[in-house]
Amino acid sequence: MEIVRTRRELLQYITSKKGGAFLVPTMGYLHEGHLSLVRMARKDAAKNGSVVASIFVNPAQFNDPKDLEAYPRDETRDVSLLKRAGSDVAFIPPISEIYPAVDLAERTTVRAGKVANRWEGAHRPGHFDGVATVVAKLFNIVMPDVAYFGEKDWQQCKVIEQMVRDLDFPLELRFGKTVREADGLAMSSRNALLRPEMRVRAASLFRILCDAAKAFKEGAEPRRIEDGTKFALSSAGFSSVDYVAVVDEESLEPAERMLDARILAAATIGGVRLIDNVRV
Ligand code: AMP
Image (tube, rainbow, N blue to C red; front, side, top):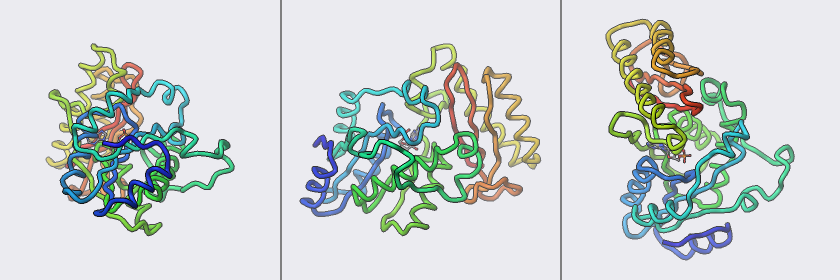
């Protein structure tokens, strides 16, 4: 596996290979969730194509500087995990390579579409614009045939899908299922920041979301489910709940019917903000 740090080196690599590029964008501190996407890319790329996994902690998508500073990093470990999962290239650019102009206000950026407005978008101002901008840049740098994202960040999948449609990126998107720990907690780089006691309690997020999905299937009214779920999360030890939302999984507007619904939630425990979602 090659480690590439500049756009120029990456272009050289991509243009020297036949078979196209298969891109897995990440912020590093990798776990099985990321690696499942790399393996999916490896399968699709077969022998001919190149799997490119990027590691870039994108400052533009952090609305809280403390969150950015605390974000866990371990490049050596990430590189060895990527190698084992079958990546051909680890693209690990320094910030100056992605954002040569320092002043954010002077840059051209992508404004994410309507699906970004609610939920994560409403609670993290500028977050999805930052995500869309860096993903658009990675698409232009890597020029992938296929790009891979995880359902764990469902709204992000939909934001990128809308961007690809609206801005005519010539590529295919594939979404991987959420990979979970044995107790159900969705894998996330931020889980490493949880102290043991809170880590145990954090698993209740998934269980409570599954209960909510069951209640919806049994005919309970969505707004009542949302209120009940918020209460259950607080009782389980979450210090704050940003949102619980029963939504249509394509539009992300509040859902009234069961077909194609998803339940999204964001809540904080032990100072760590977690997000998760389940399909009804
Ligand atoms: P991140 O490094 O958190 O930006 O995540 C990089 C990619 O991995 C995104 O597309 C995420 O949705 C995906 N991802 C993160 N956690 C998981 C998980 N537990 N299961 C599946 N995909 C995940």
